[in-house]
Amino acid sequence: MEPYLFYGIVLPERAQLSLQFSVKFSHLASKVTADAKVSVILNQVAVWVDSDHNWDIHDLRNVVLNLLQSNIAMVGYLKGFAYDCQITRVINQIRGIDYVFGIDVPCLADRVKPAELNDTVLKLREKTSGVNGLYFQRCFGDLNSAIKHADDTGFYCYRALESLRHHCAAVNGLAAADKSKQWEKFRAVAGHDEPTLREIKAAADAVRHGDVGNAVNVDRAWLLKTTWDVVDGYINAV
Image (cartoon, rainbow, N blue to C red; front, side, top):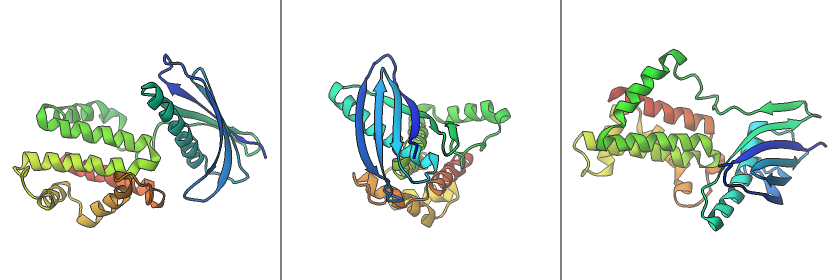
């Protein structure tokens, strides 16, 4: 069977890197095993994946990206560099695949109409000003990371909500209150119930404590969409 061929890049390109390695991996959710050969030459990435499994290309892209990121992170640790990486294209001619990956997440796309984007960004920018605005900045940063890092989606989604809980406490005179009271007020303002937020927390708990136990058992689309709905509810209320 022809291997899947992925193309990508290591950023920043001005910090040139060349690296080659081969690895056998197991996809945690499906238990499918495969072999990958990774070649990075002057930051240009090519990855061949040998597998008889008929993969969803987005799932396989996430696996390949995790393999690449984990090895690049080791290099970054040794060199003191902050590398990032992207997988941009996959080809498998036998299966009729030649696909360029977008940067969007389908379940989140088109939440704001293009004509409304500038006005919406302006309104959000106003909320990020001042000392309490730092909580919104942290929230948006974590939501961006939730999109970029599939296996850590729950961690970043819940931490984004924790930032908004702190914001809610600060603007409502509850900064010194018990966390349960802070969460109760946040849920009331955001318009979402406790079971919903507890499901998001459950997806985050293992990763928050350095484990990976429940990361593969989460419906990522539900997690992203629900978190975005909670954030929208809070933003629209304040």
